[in-house]
Image (tube, rainbow, N blue to C red; front, side, top):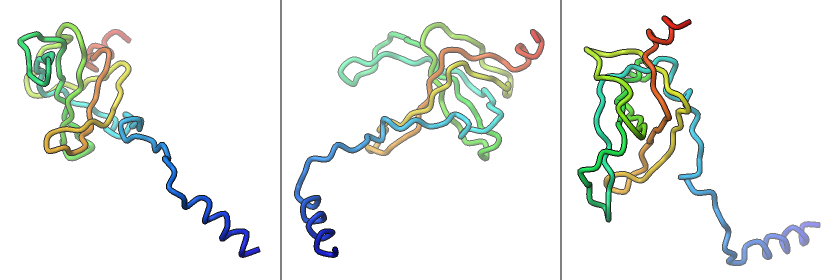
Length: 129
């Protein structure tokens, strides 16, 4: 029996091209960010051509502080027009279709990115309810 196992190992140890899951295909649960998301800034997001930034604004980056993560920040990109103003201090927000992903940033280091389709101030959502 031990010889059968050795033969199987020999077969599988041959140089075969194995397709591995790419890190960019990993889905990160937005719950990773915590339950409270605080908007602290809004910045334009520009289009790039051949790696160079153009003057064309394609959307906005909503800079979010994460109180449950020691106030670390993450930028959430939403394409289109600016959805809300920069708050005085911070404002609690929720996102529609929030998606976290991994991309290769400066110095070829993996970074966590985020995109969504909309943002709303929590106080506005509460007032509607």
